[in-house]
Amino acid sequence: MSPTVKWVLGALVGLPLMCCGCGGLWFRSQFPHSEALARVVNHRQVVQTLGEPVSGGFFFSGKTQSRDDDAVAEMEIPLSGSKQDGVLQVRAVQTSKVWGFSRLRVVAQDGKVINVLAAY
Image 1 (cartoon, rainbow, N blue to C red):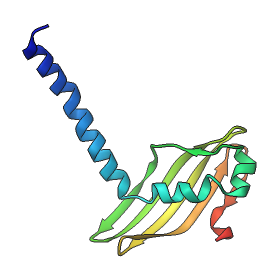
Image 2 (image 1 turned 135 degrees about the horizontal axis):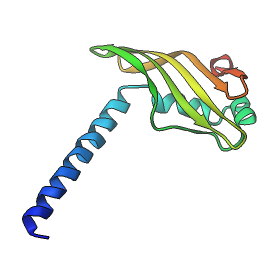
Image 3 (image 1 turned 90 degrees about the vertical axis):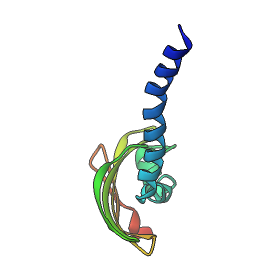
Image 4 (image 1 turned 60 degrees about the vertical axis):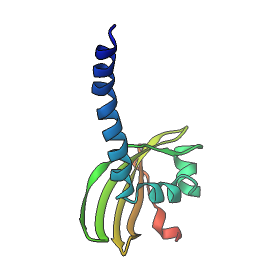
């Protein structure tokens, strides 16, 4: 393969990966994804229900609205445990770059609902 073809192929593959990777990190930093997961993965009831270890998915679904340093986010993050899977439902408000939660609820596959905020 010629050096030109290698360069073109590298650019075609590398540029989208670089953009998505950097954009993905920026995109995720705009949401309370990590903070919400940190509160849930070691929560006693969540661990008992889903089974240890509990882990959250990198991808999530939801929507957000932002203006300056303030934002509102609603999202669902898939969770998995050794017993069953679940979904973390999040509703959060960001004021002056600090996220506050009005909903942190885990819904397990078996239908059990755990209000994580009740413990805080």
